[in-house]
Length: 368
Image (cartoon, rainbow, N blue to C red; front, top):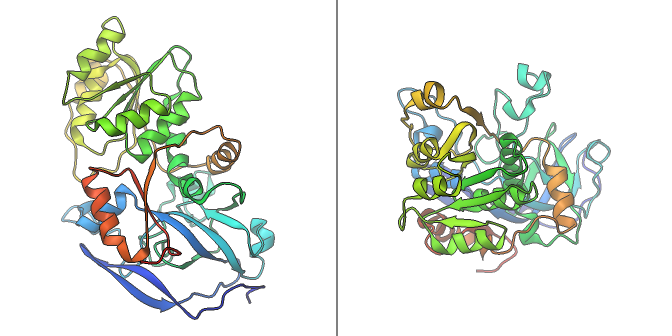
């Protein structure tokens, strides 16, 4: 039984993933929250690079001879979301310390709380891996309304945090987790490969660690300028120079202490293996569309590297929310476009080409 509600509609608009390159805007019933569930009216939902890979039909999402499909169509995509609570199922308000009218966010994964990883506190590695916008149990945020299911991890977001910043909480949490995995020390030369939304989030988080030199590598000069504004000391474009040589020149020939890969391109992995010093920390964050081939001898015999993966943003949401509210995380220039739901295909194309955009938001309140 739901508690007080501000809903006044029976149906809503929602983007629906039917199959690869088959996404449609449909009219659906507004869902009703059951016990422990939260119904929010979406303020904004970002389009993630993983959404683009899913749209394009990448085997990671749709399966191939070596893997089962991850996507469960039909499903509403979107996990970079922020909304306002409009109804609460029985017990949900007490469980999540939320009330109708609160701005709220839900971590991108809805843990099963039953598998080995969930039982041992590593919920972000949940075997079910139920990310909003891919499984039918957890419909995503490219809609006017959505449910935060029972068992989800939900947080209140201060109303004074602007929507365009609140919509960045999910990617910023992922960025913060990747930076934490890097174990940056004072004086370290840190290289972040990729100046998209996640890479730029890593720049603003890594800046708070006060490394000796913060270097950002990207092929788009406009993004490098945003990175510089967020705290990068050095920006490098591999189309203009030998970036491996440039980083070695900065480090007396040794190479960087930390390399974080956030491009999603296999060549950036091998670039990092060449660029990093012996005994350095290599963090792999990206979701790759295709398998990557590397010389593992570099990892072991040649350099004895520390290799860390980074998945989602465990434990980072409360910190990111607090830091955004206090102005400690700089995000100027990351959000470049805000579009109505009806323009979702335009938004997908913008993110795919990446020529003139960084973060593209869909806002249901905007009229086409």
